[in-house]
Image (cartoon, rainbow over all chains, first blue to last red; front, side, top):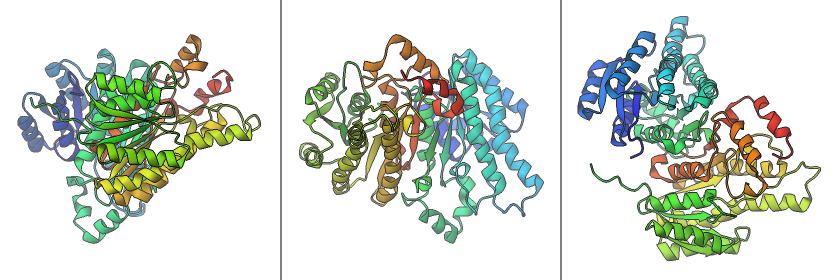
Length: 247
Length: 272
């Protein structure tokens, strides 16, 4: 197994990509703290997985919630090796349509949440002798798309370069930090966009491999970065987008 | 708990440059061993077949399935024979791992036209040729395919090896275009950009000081090995990466994540 003996926290772990990652990590031998604001779904998932997973309520914009999540990992499973900053929200609109409140909400969850999670995790990873942080950015953190929104794209761009900053600052302590850049994935977050057949057709036409991604397509990339197989990889951008940005 | 399925179960892989140019483990050897360990049947191709035989022996000791083939990847007839041989021996082709490569240092003023042509041929044209003849077999095999090209961070940054850098930048560009060209046939094409890994290819110009210097150059301050590149190739070759195409994955201990100034003192060292 590829994560034997490792302890992970996955934010936004109740559903979608995060939930798939939680199950995959446990299959590969890890213990997982599932953090999310969606309590019912998160508890149900942790229960389904069993003793190797536990749910904690985690609002990623709350420093206290992050401290509690890290404490849960350490109290229950003894340490912390892996953090997947997966929680995020989507948004659509032009710059003129976007209010300051819209901007702040998305930046808080998608960008500040990654900062707070990383900040909370590093001391315990240091104690563990190293660790791996995987930040879920987006292909829209790399290229512009008119149907997205300024705050979503800016937040995902922030995650991209925050990752490199963290990678460089903590590499000497054996803490690796990489970003993952999914294209459009079939998840609850993209449901609204996918429900519009015309929009979906346009999106698929942009993807060389000809289909939306699935949660597992991203989860296996996250697993690679979480495992020791990638022990020489830090600061890298793992793009999982069916070829969209290669064009 | 149920036994974990192999990650390349039922796959057939061709690895070019499957031998190592000296003692130890190079990128092609590491990838070959990992592919076989995960259930693939591997055709080990090398210009010097005795080198591929060393890789074969290691695979056979682990109970894996592989065979060797002599081939000069700069010659299209050898590439064609390689692709045909994989079909004849194993019945299909799913994976092509392009490892063939040589170093070439110097500036454009210093490099001879002959040396320039050689590095561009060995590092870049071989990938075009091997892919050109293998892709039709992948399509005929009916399951899509995965091509993994080995470039270098020298293809992304200045590296005191201008001809080498140009060839590797070519590999990266070729990868993106091939990915777009062949996605409709579900053939995924990705490139790995290794950083300062210690392999038999670089060993002849290394000493202990220089190895330490290279190790310390990147943020992680660990010495990379061919296994690091091999595991990345394994991931990209497997169905785990089935929605990944046209990406460049640095495996470089963070070297290209640091501001270039960090890199400059090294870059200025001619010995590097």
